[in-house]
Length: 129
Image (cartoon, rainbow, N blue to C red; front, side, top):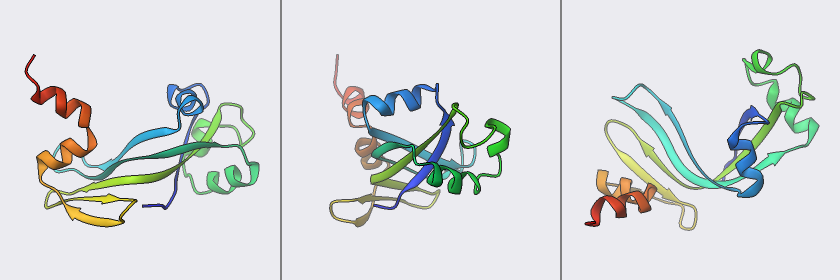
């Protein structure tokens, strides 16, 4: 938690447009298809990176950059920086939740994990109509 990661996206995507209006984000990075699945899900703050030097440096680490953009000056290239505030790692063996305010790592049950990541959805699924 507190470490940053970066996402390259097209400038016209809803993702890029939404971040300019609201920098609070949820993210999911996973490996695997349906089951078993390993990954990390979380929430954080995002910002659009406009610094050419940073965009160029990070583009060099993206093996598929040239498949999507002409160069780092391409107006369709947007670089997003995400700083996680909470994260949950998911493996077939264990789910662990980390909170930035405490930097503590705690194993979670499946229902605790669902409730922590999707509180509104969890509440709706539990409330009678």
